[in-house]
Structure formats: structure tokens, C-alpha cells
Length: 187
Image: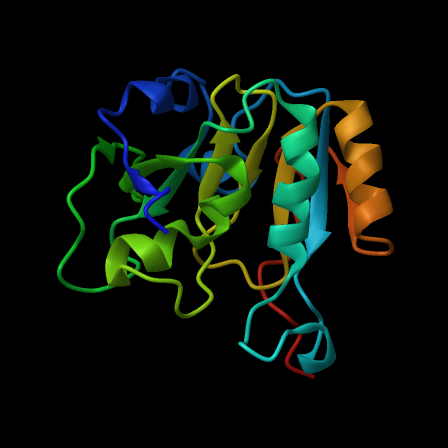
């Protein structure tokens, strides 16, 4: 997994910080301005999780989205610096209020594994990267740290239709910043 490495600097994340948007919306929905925003359900139960304990929805979404960028070989993953304990990897910091993130780069298809590779040097565990986008900024995936139900993708209409086809019954459209529950109902 040497394909994932720290970014050279934080310049690739500047576009995230230029938006006049509340930090809570930024980390939950990504930056504003995409044609469509969709929420994609994480697996609702153990039957939808693979034997290694991973929810495949994000991996399927990134594989699908790789066809909707001119730069699938170069993408970025921002991971909250407080996620994985000590020691914190050496990587450029993205100063999102209340969610300072570390910036990593690699092919879009492997960025799902950025947190575990950065902290542990191999793919172990199943923590999602918190923001993922290709170099051309054709779309952005947002997996808020405290979210356990869904993640968000800002993208084109065509990409949203492809996501709905790849993840049937798991994709719903919404407006940027629209309220949505964070946690599963314990009842």
C-alpha cells in the first residue's frame, strides 16, 4: 500500500477552505457548489459487512466515482488528526475548524484505506477517510467523524446516477446542508 503517502503540502485542500460555509457542513457534505449531493447508507447490519469487518459502500462508491474524474490516478484523502491515536503520522495539516485533518495522496481506488495505512502502515481496521476527492475536483466524498448512518457525495448528475446503480437502495438525493440524522435509532 505504498501508493498512499503524505501529500507534498496542503495546497490541494485549499479549495475546501475557500468556501464560506460552516465547518460542520464542510465535514459532513464537503464543499458547496456541486450539481448534486447524495447520501449513501453505510451497511445497515452485519449481513452487509464483509468478513474483515468493512462496510463495502465507500469502496464501491470510490470505484464508481473513479470513472467520473479525469484524474483517477491522483486523488486526496483528508483524515482527522485525532482519529487514530499516537503517534500521529507526519503529513500536511488542513486547518478545518474543530477537525484539523492530515492530507494524503494516491490513486482514487485505494484512498479508502488512507487512515489505516497512514497510522498503521497496512490495511487494518475499517475507518473511513473523512474527505476524499480527485485532483480535478470533479466530486468530493465526505464521511464525518461522528457519522454512523450515511456519507455524502457532491458530484455531477451522471455520477449520482452511476452511484445509485452501483449501490441500489442505498443512495438518496438531498440539498447541501439539509438536516439528516447522525446516529442509528437505538430502539
